[in-house]
Image 1 (cartoon, one colour):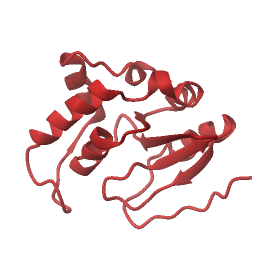
Image 2 (image 1 turned 60 degrees about the horizontal axis):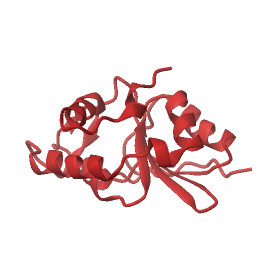
Image 3 (image 1 turned 90 degrees about the vertical axis):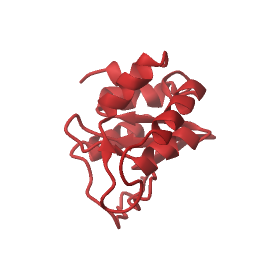
Image 4 (image 1 turned 45 degrees about the vertical axis):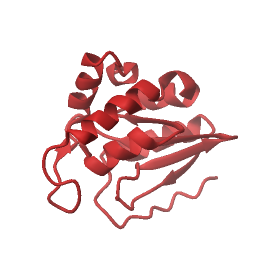
Length: 150
């Protein structure tokens, strides 16, 4: 069984963290919780040679900080933000279909370039995931996974 110890130096877990992590485990993934902050996602999940970077949010979460947007803009592998277990299951079953792609990364980099306010430290602002997905859709790069509800 996978080691479920949590490592956290920064922040608190989202309310849906454990059930999202368990969804990946049910689909055969090894799950590692990352609690370091600094722009890293909440989870790295792996199955065989497939590794997915996963940021967990709820509709009421604070949103993504600049460092997180930058991470997703630059991460070359599979990655996405999930808000519920249905999204996690889809991403686990077909990461090539549901992960952020090159167009998303390019537009996320643009969002980062236009970021308002501090980009480091405790005073940095965050942007709601829904706001980011709306901006991506306006740029012609919708995030289909963001539309999958509970």
